[in-house]
Length: 68
Image (cartoon, rainbow, N blue to C red; front, side):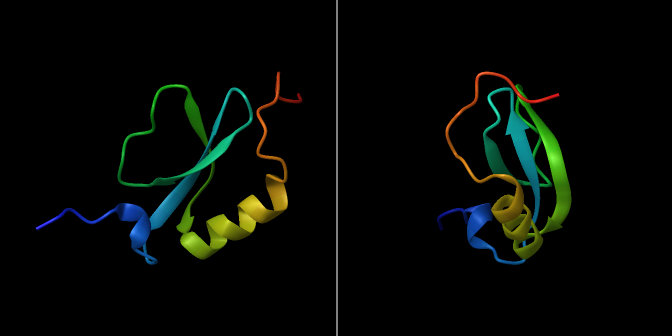
């Protein structure tokens, strides 16, 4: 049997991570945060994370540096 992708589970509790270039990623709460990323929202249901991304991350291009 194939392992399920945690992102395919609509009830998954997620974090939103951000890297030093300002890029964001959804990440399962139960998994360790990878080096170079830090949580900026959550843990929360997928719907809340999607809403946060829609209002806080409008440009997917990397930035040179994050605003202070």
